[in-house]
Image (cartoon, rainbow, N blue to C red; front, side, top):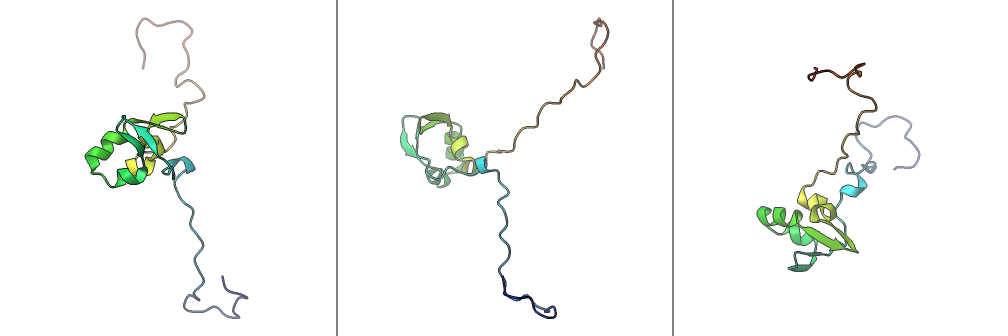
Amino acid sequence: PTGAPTATPTDAPTGASPMPTSDPRPPGCRDVEHFGGYVNKQYSNMTCSMLQNWGQVKRDYYCGREATYRDETKNVFHFCPETCGHDCAPTPSPTMSPSAPRTKSPTAAPTD
């Protein structure tokens, strides 16, 4: 930002840096920076960077495999959601009330 404001508005930007934009991804939707997991008895230190350098078919395969990192076993896409293209958006909550009112007595057949 600049010091004091100018007396009159200027026609061109003054070179002030733009405000930083916030990251739209939820915190849990970023690759774990120091992930180094044990996967499939083949890779003892698989990283998200490693996955980024592989072809799509191989990456998809390993993103769906289980990995153990810091005593936690999950699918690789939980540790590398960006690299694996995993959708981290929360699922919608269930509704608080039934969709249709309850009947006073059971019906013989399903109702609409």
